[in-house]
Length: 64
Image (cartoon, rainbow, N blue to C red; front, side):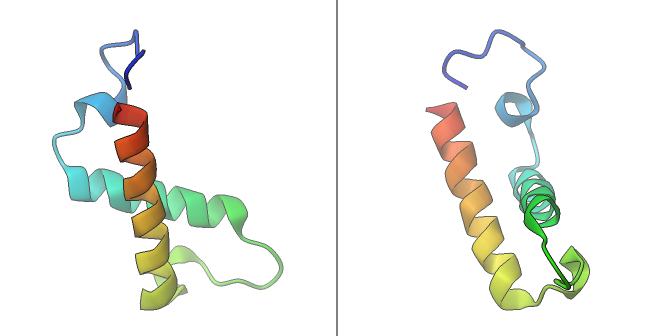
């Protein structure tokens, strides 16, 4: 992140961009699940792709 003072920040130091996006997308999904929504693995490609897009946008914004 632009003002990150911790050199160990996962967003700043990730070597596996796709892995970071996948991890963040899953955490976002799990953090916003309500009612009877399925777990990440069963969320379906549409929702997984949407949440990956959101995670990638967040990462770019955090690094700016």
